[in-house]
Length: 175
Length: 98
Image: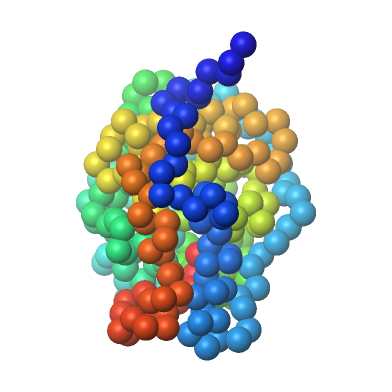
């Protein structure tokens, strides 16, 4: 029996995509070639792990408190954003977030719709439907850095904030 | 705490190795779905929540069945031609901070 496509999926051919290349962009390859062409000889060293720790959900999702971590920052915090992790109120939902220093496809899209990268309203809808137990009162912004050491420090701070807020599950949403 | 990543840089996230990954094959910037497409955004977040419930081992990736509409964006991102020939633009002065 032929497999049914996943809900919403399709089997349309990908016109215009070079069959000699993988269809999804390799950002590791693309950025290395791009910076090499600009004259930077030492490529960025990406974080690589063979495996990841796995924590099962500790209570049913319908009873779980869920939070969101983003790489964007509230615009009013831009002054200090480059240095520190930040927790901001989830309500009222922010209408605009500061993203212009981040690494996204500025020729192809925009970030005017906050919900396209910080899904607080969507989670509130799902909360109303009983899909999740609660949305965290705060969401968390993490600075992006070349330095792995700095990033690990930020991650530890994010974990502490999430524990403080009693989260059971976290959506990690980098732009 | 259980975590799930929603993201569009598949190789970067998978090489890093994360417990659960809802991959959206969209231009970087809108990992939760196209701007103002509430149905798509709901499907993406619902899929991430499904992963929290259903994934039973680390490094579980689900490709969320979303489409941008065309594929032109795939070639234009960080094209080497723009690094060599292009005028100094925004992209060329960006930090690499995926």
